[in-house]
Length: 405
Image (tube, rainbow, N blue to C red; front, top):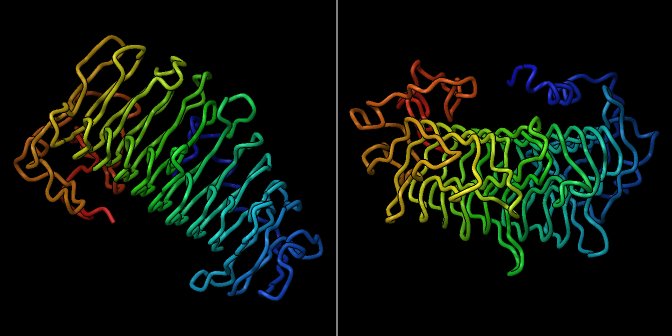
């Protein structure tokens, strides 16, 4: 569990919100009940439990909880999830207008609209939910400023639009802060011809921790962040597995400050990790890209623009690709590189089967990273402790877990 260090202090209140509650007063309902009426009824208590079955219709949630007593809307049995189905086009499946709400263990889809649209201002969590064949966005918060959001352990499969979208495009209309996006699995994102089709997207001036997610087979970037004008609004992207973007890079950095470490990115149409000066904003500064493994990406392992970089570091990354494009860019003004390894296929044990552990005696096994900085990871992709000095790449050694699920 992430410790409440000073740098992550804004996220600690959110973790407290999820773990400390006063007395729970629960009401259990079934598919024949009006689930929306019950959720909004203050007499229903602070926990609404949905039994197995299909629930039809949409719901605007206007009743919330309190800081230490959130309103919890959850499945009775996650092994037999209650499924909320909405066939209309005039609303979204759930619209969350109230603060201090936890949605847990529900299933959504098929639908042609957004599954969970958040319009609240404080402390919302979406945990252990399943989204299948969603025509809109599975989880979205892009219409009001929100402080405190957890999106964790959800499954999004066969989405017809961006899976997760947080913050406003212009960065001014709203900002989402203290976001934790972790342990989600996104498999298959398509989109209309005029749409991008992201896996996870965090917009300008919003900050987040994005970690331990698996994102496969998206149309656009698997993960994209846009950075912030405020250099204290840091983003951390770590221990994610991103594969198979059909039109873009696996992880796209449109601005800093951001730390990208311990990620694995492979088989993407562009690069594994790509830095782009999005909208010519000039925000590619305070960017640290370290200890990532990139493999078989068509345009290169890690790519950067030829200008407008400041304070950008590439440290301890390792990669291979079968095109003529170099794995790493040449050094230039604003970009410093250290201990990166461009290797042949013999670096990794079995990359085509998602085993990126170093082969004994290879360049990856022999070399260690001499660079030192506080942002370097203490663990690897699987959470195994790093040696001192550590190896390059996302996996420290061949011991323990090896294959990415």
